[in-house]
Amino acid sequence: MTDAKTRIDETVKANDVVLYMKGTKEMPQCGFSSRVAGVLNYIGVDYTDVNVLADEDIRQGIKEYSDWPTIPQLYIKGEFVGGCDIITEMTLSGELDGMFEQNGISFDKDAADKIREANA
Image (cartoon, rainbow, N blue to C red):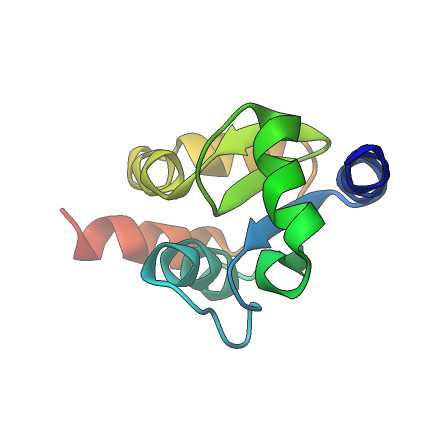
């Protein structure tokens, strides 16, 4: 598992935004991963996706790395942000926008506003 932890650590630190998910950003393999990838895709965030279904060591390792039991998991600038429910709440509150802005991550603010309008 140490090798998996090293690979996870390197990936999280080398990329501004990383989503550990079931499937890929083009083809999510579970509803929760689909929701988070859908938000990131819709608002135009450039992110690295890691398919945990392709590597059992990574699938288990990411849970230990973050001390978070579920997937998907979103990381911004090396920091664990949360899973599906947290990302959904942060999107709807505008907190995710602020986090992207603070970290210099480009995204489509109008698209983020449209998500909030549609869920108001």
